[in-house]
Structures are given as C-alpha cells and as structure tokens.
Length: 199
Image (cartoon, rainbow, N blue to C red; front, side):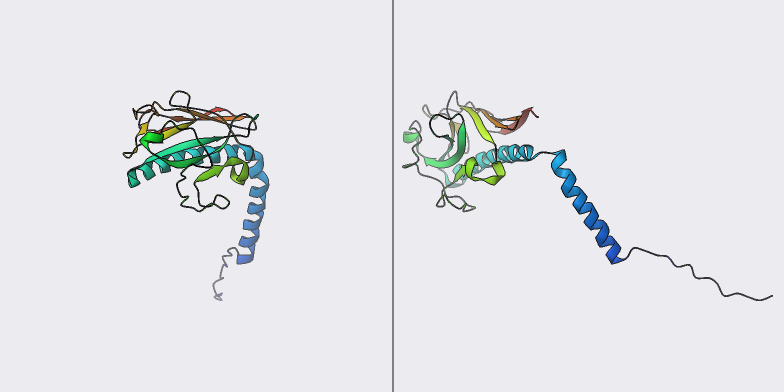
C-alpha cells in the first residue's frame, strides 16, 4: 500500500483589486440611486430647518455667555415679493427692543464661522447659499406677529413690550412641494420641527 501525500486545499480570498472593483461598483450605484430616493429639495429644506434651529440656540447661548440681549431677526425679501430671504443675529438693548430692523444701523453679532460676503456679520442669506437652494421662509409669526424674537441675559425669550416672557410662535418653510414648520415655544424658545407636507 502506497501512502499519498495529503492534498493541500487552497482557500482563496478576495484580492485587493477585486475588493476595489466591488467598492467602485457599489459607489457608482449609490451615486446614481440616492438622488432618485430623496430629491435635492428635501435635502435643502431639511438643511434650512436645521440651520434655523441651531442658530436660534446660538443666539440664546450668546446672550447667556455675554450677559447681553440678542435678537434673532428675519430679513424680508425685496419689496413686492413674499416671504423672508434669511435671518441675522443682532445685539440689542431693552431700550431698542421695539425698534424696527435697519440693515444699515443694526449691531450684528460676529459670525464665528466667518462666512464670506458678510464682513464677519452673522447674516444667513438663503438666496446666496447653495445649501438652501429653492427654499423660501414663507412666513414668520413670533411673539404675536413679530418677525424676530429676543433673548435676555439668562437665555430666555422676551417680548418687545417691557421685557415680559416671549410667547413663541412659528416659522414656515417651503421648497418644491415640501412644507416644514419650526415651532418656537414660549419663554424657553425650545424649537421643534414638523413636516407639514412632502411632494
């Protein structure tokens, strides 16, 4: 009887080239499929809602950190057009609570991210920012009909009449058939986002 040497079974794995080809195919498929699953308008309106919420929180925090008053002011579109083009964060005092927004004399808070084109001022212009392409701030109803809300040195929302607690309100956004609502609660200015409709 003759003894045969044992057979070595080769286990074959994937080569680096095969793995790279597979990853490349999956990447291309993802790039082609993803825009069809969620349209660009949905991404833009979600980004706009997130920006408003985070910047309201920033205005509150900045008021608290500096022990000063801050106004979160929406900026109207040019005359004859509906809605608002964006918003800004301003320094205000109790004496200037009821003053209307004047872009020329407003005391803007510095933008910590240093956005270009605003000379360091904290201004967010939806029409000039590709992230918010096609998004319109349709309506703003804060503190019973105002287009701004003010935060005191404790970070609480206060109204323009004598510094009494703010009553909150809503901000409605629209983009290609999608409608979102940002709700600002009374006094604390806690924000929530609600999807009103999608295409």
